Length: 335
Image (tube, rainbow, N blue to C red):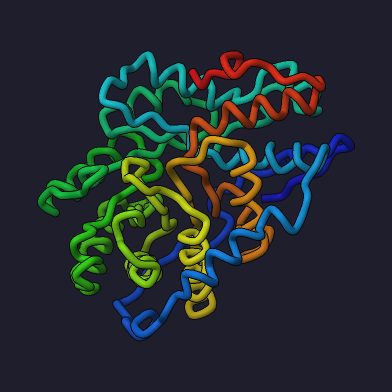
């Protein structure tokens, strides 16, 4: 995606991001791409600990990074008491993520900035599609027995097909963690490949639930298997695990993503999700993306945040940039 930097430093999208690179077709399982690979946890933790301490992003530059983060948010509601009304309010926030006076202060015109997608349960997809009509904001749906994924495969595949038929343009699938933990890589590959086929034209994000994979070696291997099976994105977490997105896990996944790209020529997206609540975390993950993969991975076609609650703090920080004052967090409720 092309962007321009205005005088006040805000990044403003100037072209649609989706579809600007060839889709990952997947490949047969090749364990040689990950078996024997060892991840040094201590080194990964040291690398991530210095991401925001070795540099300072302030004022207009910080505002620019935060505006860019808004573009990459998958605004999400995955609650048992979701209703059509809640989804409609979330979609209204997706269309207009910042208050009018903040938009004006950043030099943004009305409707110029939107989030990357709206993510809901399958039964909420029709409500989201209707509420987002004419906006070009895609609807994403979780599927495959989210969050545990412990359903018979034919039911998981049927859930994907149903969500796509209702209008979902993106599907966030969950992997079978048992297959990863027992290192049944062929079984895991075959399941994910079947899910990719069921998605059809809808892009597939493979949620690895990294907090339940025990080791960074397993995280690297599962990332590789998901990409070999045709995943368009790899995603850290469901947001329901006790440990969700962390920088060392994300670094491990990005290294796998980079290795896969070098071997195949295909670019895969990345989505950290769960546990991120503060604007400064948006800066840390974007710095990681830029340093590991380059500027292209700061666009929503290759990078998303699964961090809806973080949007409120981003809006609060941007209001401080515009007005010089911090507003109470209640002024920036999500919906």
